[in-house]
Structure formats: structure tokens, C-alpha cells
Image (cartoon, rainbow, N blue to C red; front, top):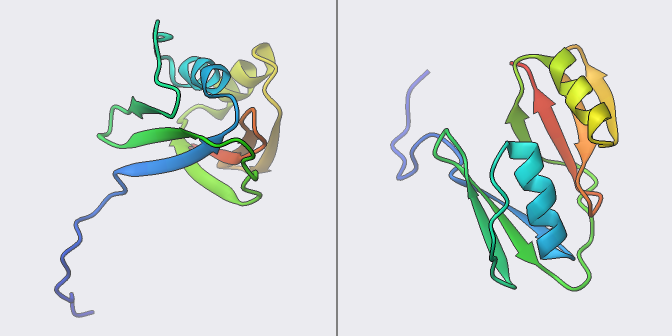
Length: 116
């Protein structure tokens, strides 16, 4: 297959997630991502830098509409530990297949934990 020239490089540098209560969502995503809760946050946006160079942008919106399709995938090599984490933190989840688990954030957005 011929490679076409493109101005884009591989990777997705950012995912944007609209949330109603930015403070609560920052706390929730901090727990999910193993990050320290920041002492102060802006009222409009919060950015989580991930180890792979990507970013998750939480954007305040008064009436966000939950995304009912997978919004993004987070790498989770051990799904048994991932399920245990979800259960101990009361995070609603659903096994999708042998390699993925769907779960929801506080606003009902669907996210995915993936072991591949």
C-alpha cells in the first residue's frame, strides 16, 4: 500500500470532555488517573497531562450532553485490577469484550479501559 503524504503525525494529542461540575470532575479524573488533586483549578477548563504525551481537557459546560459512544480509551493492561479499582471506587462499568471495559464519568460520558 502506498503511503500518502500528509501534514498529520501519528497520535491523538488531546481529548475534550464537557462536564457540568468542573471541581467534582477534576477530583474524579484525578482519582481515575492517579493524579494529585490540584488545590486550585480554573472555572472554565482543566488539563490532565498523560504519560504518553496526550492530554485530557475537561471543559465546563452548564448543560453538557453525555456522549453515548466511547469518547476515549485509556490503557489498562490488567483488566482484573481495573475491575477491582472500579468496584472499590463505586464506578459504574460494563465488560464489553475480553479486552475492553466501558465505564462512565460523572456526567454519563462513556469511556473505555482497554488492555491491548
